[in-house]
Image 1 (cartoon, one colour):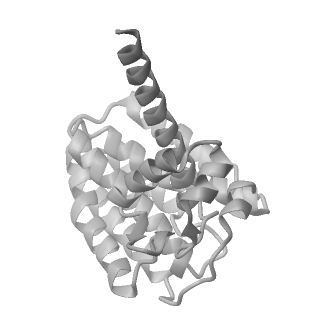
Image 2: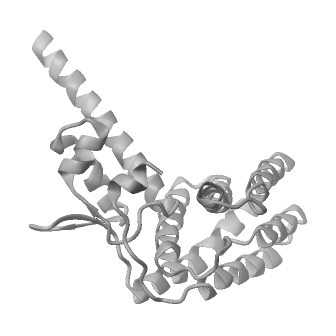
Length: 236
């Protein structure tokens, strides 16, 4: 009985470590510290996190299920490197889903929700005038979090999960194809969407959201960027 308990405990701990690896690598991919096509070897991941290759492999497999990592037989794992067509599909999907998020949110929108979104916009604005890689990454994350917060207010867990994946994939696409030195996910456009939600103007909020997504996609130049070493990305 004690042996079985120890095995279960070890399995549980292993799962937790795999999740920690998934989360750390996911954050590095989303905030653009890990570039598309970066190789992620099980041995290096295991070494960096102090875990076995089996635990590292489990973390990488979780990322592959989300579409953020590509597993290639006999070659290993790589940060996903979406093609121009795949990049367009990401934003086509956002155009289909995010107006639905608006519809789901607006009927249940409260002043408390508005306060939460406004606080998020305040957080986002803090980084607009700052320079440097750290501020840039924080700004990108805060911008994406606005969309995730909206989805979390929909009351639809499936919709929230879809948005989580789409925002993550969008960050990957922007890392690869983004031209602008500032956040493509415009602060002023987020504020306009929030104002329309507060007025309960569903059609205007949807129009603004679609315009916003168009603006993000218009900032793509569809040319690949260079890769980054895993160790360098995680230690930044």
